Length: 566
Image 1 (cartoon, rainbow, N blue to C red):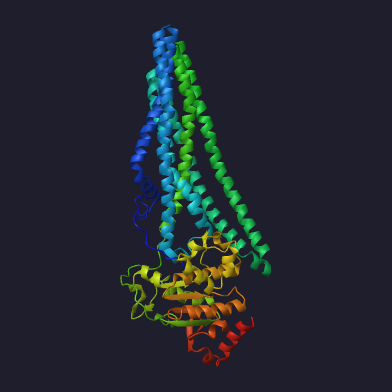
Image 2: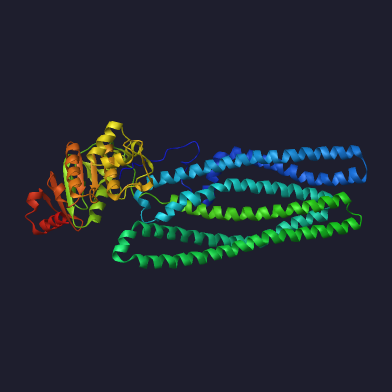
């Protein structure tokens, strides 16, 4: 595989912290590097909340001490203070929001980096445990929701500051009104708690189903041509429709819980406003509350509608963030199936796989012939250390060598290797002369010319702007450009015509004469150029020798001649 994963190194942003075991540790780990920024943001939001709520309290002073008392000096004084508060509140809020938003953006970068590092480190340990759809959603939807926790905590602190300061000021107007506000918050929490717990559970189920359905859609699209050829497209479409319907029904369940929460958000605060208004009016009639105090109470009641609603919105977002963090931590908990305890520097010599009996000399072209590609691919993965095994390199176990050196010297090339969106130069990652030589050896000149005749030509994501044969030859060019000591190539020319395959086999053999190359294929165009041929049957080496010598076996002759006629 051309990509060469390296162990993650510590970053200043904390992206290489020990892997979290719980969503809480994951989220706190994201916030910890920004503790100072978050503290400053909370302070600014506290000042913004104080400035906002003090305006409503000052309104009562304007009415009582300025308008009713007809005191121009007091009126000017309180209006000036209100003007200062009106100016300060948005200023403090914007500055505070910048702190949290910056931390949010940094957290998104950290999550993407950690996912990438862990995917490289875990390698084949991820295979079969995380679907393609899940890998699409983790660095997009889940990353965004988890990183947004920092910003949502900022909003929560802002509303908490407004609620706390507002409650204290309402209490100063009259203790009974303050008691109503506090009691209302307790009632809201008691009602919303069970609803949020149910929403969390349903969102988790919904998120699981999205990952599975996305993976199935990708599989259908990727194999659509084959499915149509065997008449399986309608069957898979029916299965997709069934699962899509189930996902829709689960979405309705999520919407049901969410709708109750939104209803609570809009209805409960109105009840409290009505209570404050009613009690405040009775107190004003009895003379226990001034006109200005009543005006302030009305104003506070109106603001508390928004504050109470925002509390519920924040809780809703935090539930979604918790679900996303849970999925991220489960992915990060996947361990590699390759033990990276080796310390020896890469040396060289023959590669041997005791499980299959396959041996690859340190120079020359070896061709592995088999009727089943999967066992041969597994053997190559063991030799490239993408699976732990008893493989031997030279005179010592392969696992005793440093994994970084193994990756540098032994490369596995398969049709599953991904082509990322990049220029040709970025894809090949070598000097221009070496890049052009690799393109020539892989017979990929048409790729070069088709992208503008320049190494600056861009390859689309997944090589979508290339044909299947062009993608295969570009993968081969990338592997040749890396010039590994040993190249293990699984069916590198299966998607090209015979003439092109013959040219590739000839050029690769010449270009890598002093290095070791193993090619898994039954094509006679490779076999006639092989220094050594290995014949594998049911995952075990059945015979080895020259192509001419092995042709004496009827089964081998039938296997290779069938390939030639195909």
